[in-house]
Amino acid sequence: MRVLVTGGAGFIGSNLVDALVARGDQVRVLDNLSTGFRENLASAAGKIDFIEGDLRDAALVNAAARDMEVIFHEGAMPSVPRSVEDPLTSFEVNARGTFHVLEAARAAKVRRVVYAASSSAYGDTAVLPKVESMLQQPQSPYAADKVHGENLCRVYTRVHGLECVALRYFNVFGPRQRPDSAYAAVIPKFIAAALAGEPAHIHGDGRQSRDFTYVGDVVQANLLAASAKGAAGLVMNVGAGGRTDLLTLLECIGQYLGKKVAVVHGPDRAGDVRDSQADISLARAALGFDPRTSLEEGLGATVRWFKEHAAAGSRESGS
Ligand SMILES: NC(=O)c1ccc[n+]([C@@H]2O[C@H](COP(=O)([O-])OP(=O)(O)OC[C@H]3O[C@@H](n4cnc5c(N)ncnc54)[C@H](O)[C@@H]3O)[C@@H](O)[C@H]2O)c1
Picture (cartoon, rainbow, N blue to C red):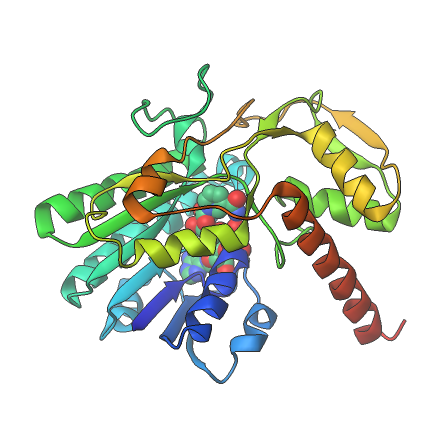
């Protein structure tokens, strides 16, 4: 299959690229390397067509979509706090960039677009698990822009017959997720702190909970969504279906590393939701999605990757 992965140099995108290359697809990546890295594509180098460019450039997105059968749209400015500080860039990249991708897909007669939507669409619901029939209640510019993208997906399926499937990811983690950005996700931050012998910083009391989902299972959902019959026009949750609070998560990471990790509590963070857990019945029924990686297995793989990566990093820096 000929496929385009936007954001393919990022954490989730590059894991997806590896799986697509492994199954023999012809893969093109469009990425501006703003939060992605060429080194994430090291194992795919020479086997893919890499375009360094911006989703905000409609002509370039059109060129990238030409001759493609499927587009996996992973590219985004994926951060709640950054979208609060810089809502215009969030809108331009996340909402308008998605519009460009859908227009390009329509013009190029792409068969299907699989869109990386977000569980942040739900906001703070009192009822768990979160199910797709609940109201969209975005609480941040990022969430609103991602909701705009999934609404566009629905509309392009209905109005233009372009097959779109939107996958609302729930707190994805795994190899290649970066710990070093101010906006980094909690698992790589905790692991990096623990490896460095530093305390972990937690916003609030640490009892807020998330449905941590291993990246391999998110890749599985994408591969299924590219061809599942009857999935066009649907927006669905992609999570592990469980819920773990941050203090328990930290304990689990400490067990893998054989040490107790100290905690420093700070104030709650604007735009964050309290609890999150996915009902994945729709993805199971519509895609045959079956998340197979337990939190423990996923954390084990992630901790191993961090240790190897840290070792490679220190060799490269000559220490
Ligand atoms: N990680 C999660 O838990 C999570 C949860 C819900 C949704 N998502 C969505 O999944 C997708 C991938 O997220 P990720 O966690 O891999 O983040 P990431 O930052 O690692 O990947 C995003 C990629 O998009 C690229 N990009 C950003 N702006 C761009 C632009 N203007 N033009 C071209 N490329 C651009 C970045 O360079 C990066 O490679 C995003 O759409 C995000 O909104 C992620």
